[in-house]
Amino acid sequence: MLQDGEKGVILQRDKKTYAVAPHIPCGVISPDTLRKIADVAEKYNAAALKLTSATRIAIVGLQEEDIEKVWNDLGMDKGAATGLCVRSVKACPGTDFCRRGVQDSLGVGLKLDAKYHGLELPSKFKIGVSGCANQCAETCIKEIGLVGMPKGWKVLVGGNGGSRPRLAQEIASDLSTDEMYGLVDRIIEAYKKHARRGQRLGAMIEKMGLDEFKAMVFAAEDPDIT
Image (cartoon, rainbow, N blue to C red; front, side, top):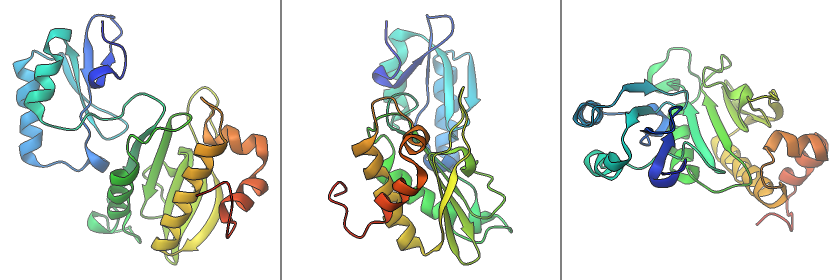
């Protein structure tokens, strides 16, 4: 029996069938890829197609003997839906498609996804990018939340859902896009170096204190961050 994450599968409740969730960066998908997913689901008698909270399309109810053939037919990257890593980057339509967008959340989200998706870290890690203060990408409950404001980016850290939910805390505002990218790098590197295995970013910040965390990621030269 395959385990969660092995060959990109998610074991289902019945302990017999599997789901796969091919990677769809920031939920942007072409009509051709949509048709391919639908064709594969029909070919292998999937029980359902499910739009996930991470903007993927999960193909649910597959048999173990079909998994390799499913991935071969899809020809898509396996989504990091499980494991201790950057799970997803969720981005709203931003200035590309939304009249309320004030910053290019979709462009930023796609760039962050290309750089960080699947990166192994001490625990699961989620990033949200919202193009305005409405925070449609649920940035307030992400490890890193980026919120587009008229003068630049607001950066939130340490949010998560789960059994012990936390709201993210603001550590910077009015950053240029380049400044924001640099801060995101330093946050992830600090977390990678200082968190215990299984410890979410919010729990790490809670233990060390927000002021100490801010001093660490804003230090001009921190010997613990390369």
